[in-house]
Image 1: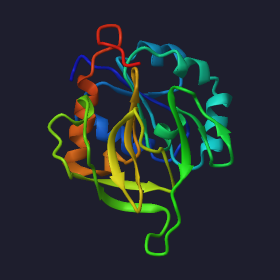
Image 2: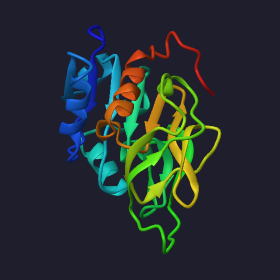
Image 3: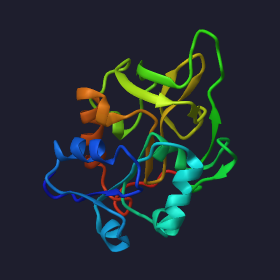
Image 4: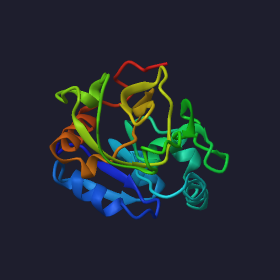
Length: 208
């Protein structure tokens, strides 16, 4: 992975250090930055996020990163809230998002036996695509969220918490995982390695 330059977009969110450390375990070229040229020159870009969609989008506006992220051609990975920001919009205070995946974020259904947020280990099912090479069906990963993307044509993996939802999504060069790979042990590390193995969209077949 020495030839890969990973740039984690500095969105000011609290989990950047853990995401950076996870990538540093598999790559020796990891940068946290919000500098536009540094981001554009990266081989792989990561969009982390915690908190609310509205606050995160405000940060991207503040840092003048909206159009930049929308125009990236290299593989981009949104993690947790970062995945939700890739969609058209979120029902969390009716926020417009980046519009890169043709989906909308909705709240998980409230059930007495299933408290929200959905927090802890849950299994991945219906795995497909390069992010999940070498990952067994039913592998467990770590989630913390109350909103989710429904299952659709963009779904790469599903999870169930009283309802099926997208544990991972993709459209073109934009990938997302609702779970936290940096907190998901060897399974999470494998998914991050798989992400770094994805080539630029200039050389791979683009997904409509």
